[in-house]
Length: 418
Image (tube, rainbow, N blue to C red):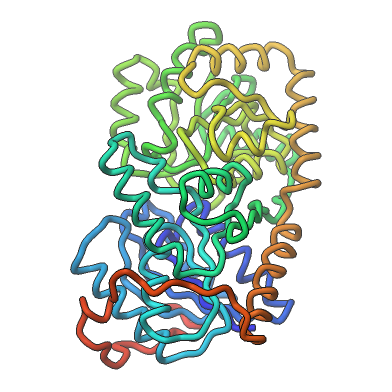
């Protein structure tokens, strides 16, 4: 089976997800090819995706996609994808996140490539804005592009429910394949202590942290507001934000404004993020919404108890008691739950064990890979029998917007570092 993954968001959770897929399915006879930017717009230091792919011999087609909407850049990326799809044959094309999802679906159908198409939103873009016009615009794009793929893959039951309720796709076309991760190694007490020394944090100080992009979706303002409240009760506490993003300077300025900069450590993107997380006493996730967040899964596997906002995606992870959920807008509840956990170590142990049990039962890479392989195989089989689900002709054709695709400007990279 030959699969093309089209990826614009080559950082954070999408990066981890795609790396797990292409690496984990190779032993099952799945040959993966990836079309992606060689460097993501606003990568904030997370630039290892292409290096990983080349290190494991995954062929790459460079495509200069960017996150923001740009008619000229998007048209060029679409033409590039069309040309790749006319140049190579694939059994299936898997599209990841909204930009690649929209351009990729247009490209496959315009190119005439007979591959089956699946799309993973990894968090729905229309949930990420409070402006009604923007929300309706992004929702309409999802609705327009939906008929151009056989399946939409939700990463959580909550995301699946939203896709159906929003009229993006009928229930039979939406499959839930929860995210799964390869278990990270546990740290010893000595290694945890060494990590704290590296971060400049006292050995016995309460340490609360997260691993996330500094982006509006993750709501660093909420993180800092709750941190300030915790510090009123536990003045010796420290807080770590592992991850870069557009709001890095805004967050540092806000920490200084609140007088808590001495206790807040913004350490940027780290390739050793799991080592950092293993040193936390409590993991926080303060997001406004998620698909199914990977960082809390990593915290569960590492044995770190979790307190998080009760929002789409995260709720699916923690509602079984694998962590504590607090109302999204109630920073006092987040702070109070954290203080109580720091005061009762045995409760932290209980939560950590519950999280680890959840990870073993539902969060492993093996479970995700098995479910995803089933989706791939069933669609390829349907295509082979000529019974694939019909798709409707696009309401507009990319070929009317672009000049005819020219020859490829650069050949696909085959296992060598670009």
